[in-house]
Length: 235
Image 1 (cartoon, rainbow, N blue to C red):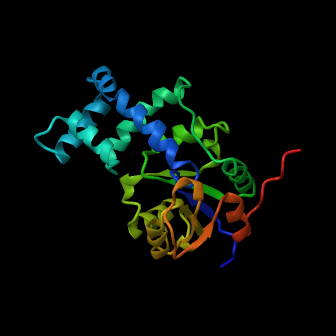
Image 2 (cartoon, rainbow, N blue to C red):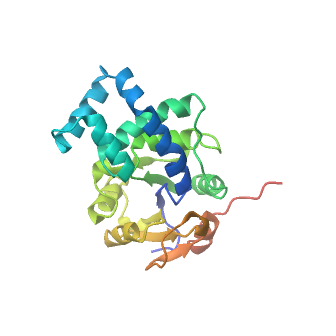
Image 3 (cartoon, rainbow, N blue to C red):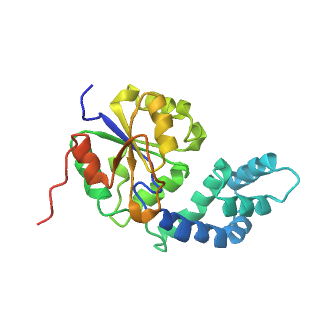
């Protein structure tokens, strides 16, 4: 097995983007817009189906009440994540929102993609939300760099089977894939599935202390540790 991976699978929150952006910008935006969104989309078949999922998971409670409770708890529930993604879409498309990325992320992603390394995302946020963040990021539209986007519809992020499913979808042996995350338990699941993993430790962003995995302060350090191309500095 060569040091350089064939593909890189990255988390978003705490890995490419500040936890504060999600918690202090995106979550409040969705919470404030929830009631109006549900009223405006009351006859939208997609929203109707999502609300039916919510009701099935929490019978006997109004779906909007359940959603607000899940939002407060930051619950990793697929219909909630899908609805948040739909709400955020309007904000990204009209320019009220831009996806936050740390300065090292976009240059490294571009360098890795240019070198033929496949890129993919696996996040608890919906695929739609992932594409919005990278498609309307502070560094421009990065979605063409990625060959796959995965969310919790294929399984939880702390379950090894989820990472095995990603490897199957990418048609790659798990040990050809490097997973990047700030959460040690997610790295555990990825390595149990046979992937390599590197835990991002961005100290200013409140990442957990201690790790059983190789650590890196940013994507430049990931490149150094795994023999990946480094961006050419701007002149």
